[in-house]
Image (tube, rainbow, N blue to C red; front, side, top):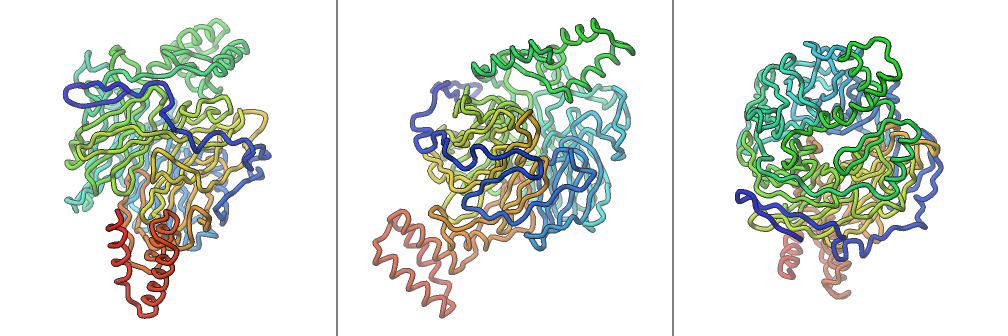
Length: 616
């Protein structure tokens, strides 16, 4: 482990070796029910453990074939993003979700968040339109293009009103909604854009030059939008914090030997391939098509020949470098974040910023300040972050391959495309302690890598439900981040066993007693936890006493458990599991709880929690 210092801000580089004991309990498992599941779109074989699947509901017709993305929650509604717009599900009966509203409004990725009567939707791609039209935008520069944040009034959830948008220079790949505990008049939207900078002719003030060429560059910054709750149509960008200042280029790993062979085979087949630095990319036709059309348009080529296509191949590395934000400052670190998880109750945010994991002070919402940064040569693409409930730990996910590659094969390193875990000390400095990766191999046709998830409010423990694309969903216990264990899962067979096809779990979150999974190709899944050797019925019941009015993926709530007899019993179950009391003491405590319940005396919860504190 090497430590370097830049202008007083510490960042850590983890060497390209497995951390000691990182996978002592999580080696690759080959006799797992998830191995060999039959393929299919809506009829794939499934494997499930320590969960009950209540239902799967398919997307409406206009959304089938387009990618389902992130989820947000309000009251008894689930808002599901999709590249074609928004689906709103009424989950008053979680076992029978009803499509309450489909709103056709194409944009990538259509990540969603909600607060009170407002719905926010991200748009980044070049085809999104201000008017939500489905015809796209063909012009290089257009006043019709939407790249930024859409704002809807959902006072009537069944009739969303598109009231405003805020355009940004790089669009909004994702966004995070910040409710400052000290400010009841405004909310703040942190915008993360990862697309190329749009021309100044389309949005004045945008600049794709490097900071050395233009100090006002649209690179190396995020955008903070202030939204007055009394008049949200006045929402506007109020600051552009440069949270990446002075970060050096992070260490990166190259391809595996298997990937090198696959890359050369793709080149031999005439596929579009490109190498940028240590990375090799094989581009699917659906991505090449708009790029080549744009290239021919720029060259004013109406009837392209084979030599024109060859010229495009030659220009492809430069085109890709521009799309990925490459610049003349080759020794500089990342110029964008993918996700920023806000935890306002502790005044911190975790930024997953491509080459780094950042810890931010967000006590001043308009001026977030970087207070620590970590880099890891095992990570390819820092994607998202989740804090422990008490804020003493943080995990980052690595979306190696961008979510479209098979990265959970037997030949793929366990440290690549994994989660990395850090403790956070009293000075807000992060220390690496271990990795976790899905422990079961997936096939070469399944896009599989770490993706989005959330905590499940099991009292006294850090339980995490997480998406792995076509690796399915996995629930882990990371109370001890040096020994992360899997305690439940659900997986389907590949969409296709003949060719790579997008599918799997994009995001999965616990909300008010149920687990909701946004399945990229298949719709919306709803699950319940079931008791097991890892979770007792009382722990699950205590978790279900936590009820929220809303939940957004990138605004982490603090879980608070109301006093209940289930909570008291959950604590005693944990004392028994952890061998913190004798069998006689456990029996006595359970008898006390039974008696207290008969007398409706909830003070037993305080007494047991005091006992636990005294043991610690």
